[in-house]
Image (cartoon, rainbow, N blue to C red; front, side):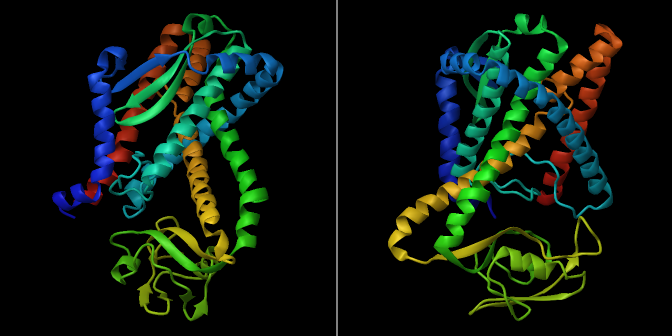
Amino acid sequence: MSFLSALMQYKFIILFYLVIILIVAFNKKRFDFQAKFIALYRTKFGINFMEKTSSRFQEFIKIVGLVGIGVAYIGMIAIVYMVFDGLYKLIMIPEAPAVLSPVIPGVPIPGSPIFVPFWYGIISLFIVVVIHEAGHGLVALAHKIKVDHTGIVFFGPLIGAFVEPNEKTLQKQSDVVQYSIFAAGPFANVILAFVLLLCFTLIFNPIIDHSVVPEGIYFQEVQEGFPAEAAGVQPETVYNLVNGQEVLDTTKFIQVLDKVSPGDEIILANENLTHTIIATESPDDPTSGYMGVIGIQTEHQLKNPKFQIIFDVFSWFYGLFQWVILLSLGIGLANLLPLGPVDGGRMLHLSLQKIFGKDKGLKIFSKITMFFIVLLLVLVFVPIIKALI
């Protein structure tokens, strides 16, 4: 795709991000800038609500904060494993998709296996970040630590939110209290994802099952350089036959693919199209066949067309909540990386200070932070560069 065609395709997305940048630029006196590209706009919005909530459920929130410490350390171990596993795959399995990727709604990132739709991404990110920061604020207030400010933060053109507990009071608290406050944000993301998954299981999916009939499957993205693209498979095109079998939903499609090995022939078809795909090795398992498609979805037809508008609105929120779950888990884990100012880093820094003393603990933490920053830069930018060239 040429630069001009890309500019035209994403003109509204570019315009949105440009407007955000101009708003910050023309109101820069109202913002506190950090690291030159992070702009903070401080307010008192929501503090009164968090104070009332934390006062009413004080003991329960404290208990949730304590549980969050254990969950956060498990999450830290998980994200560290993912980082090293990603480095191994980057070196040993060059065709494997990127393990880490920046999230810019509406903008496809070269080499990334995930594309975040614009409005779904913007709204989901804001919800996830607000819940994350509210977690920090509620646990801090439950321990009688004043929240000085809330506000909006701009990471370049991306919008988020923040909560600022009083740092001097926080540092005077016991280790357990500090751990629980640091862990509260990522744990709030886990709780949000769990609640939404429960809603999908008990509410959303049963409504879908009783309102529609499946018509076939489609793919949100077809990966460049893989067999599906070579065979002419198109994203968003509905298919209902695989190797002559009727396949109307993702469950059936995955069952068929589970039996495919590298070199096997897959005939993907609908009433008008037929594609013959020769499976390659899966980046994750060389013994499994791989087509090179991302985001397998079921196409549905509404049983009663009279409710089409209502169902379209319901479907939009269904898609939104799917992205909230995915981004909530992703951002929660990312915040548990053992580096710099993120929550996992603050927990690790506190632990190292208690084990090795203030000065030595800081030196060890600084080295760990630099190591992971370099590692993350490699994992993020090498797949992008490889995809571009």
